[in-house]
Image 1: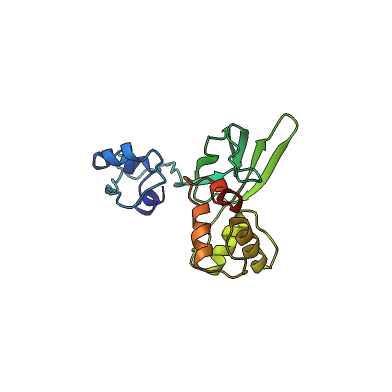
Image 2 (image 1 turned 90 degrees about the vertical axis):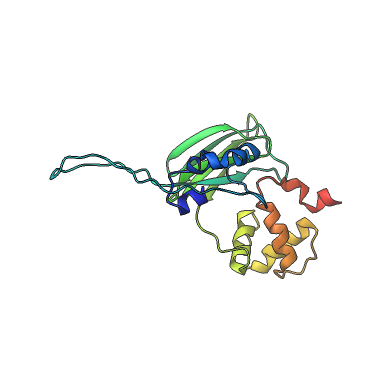
Length: 207
């Protein structure tokens, strides 16, 4: 979706449906994932023409561009909450369904979307609701980007960023130093791979 938006196209289908991308479409079922060696053809934007009377007022409706959000829904042990019913509300628009086998909910939202909620029915008596704050995060190679991603995973200790780091390092089996380093960034990047089960990344799974 990001490639479509960056090139002025309506959505990702404008790229996927290009004849030049037929083989890529067969190979990648998830339009948001590309891997090393993939070749993508980006078609030119085609200008739309609307015949209209001269010297008259005309009204046009323009749909805002959209982007994909991906939410990994896991239990405390990192296992996907597959099959649980959910309701996702983003800026007043609501969708619902069952959480997929991999635990990842994908939904296209307006690029201006800023907030929402996700409610998951754990069992007949229990529902869990999370407030969602959508927006840009600094790159992973910046310390602020690392902290933002740790907070996004639930490691929130106020202004003590070293505590975020120590908690994540302890959970994933890294040396608990409280320092942001390449090993931490590599592990954290894995947590943001939609194809990677979070439970397989935890220390418990490794031992």
